[in-house]
Image 1 (cartoon, rainbow, N blue to C red):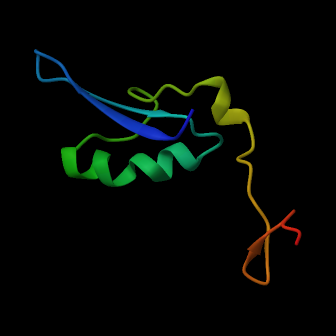
Image 2 (image 1 turned 135 degrees about the vertical axis):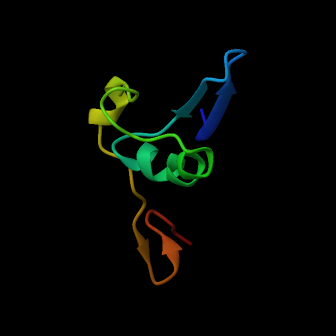
Length: 72
């Protein structure tokens, strides 16, 4: 599953910003500009974290401009 951000607007005017496919705190970084633009604050009263929040984001090492594991 790729990474994506969903913005759900409720009929009552509520706004829900959900980050899918992210691990660790990268979800907060990915949604920051949307939350700011919509005036949605990120605090304990309106933020729920998923179990993936406590996982480490996988990073790919790049050596000399090539992804690690590149051969040939």
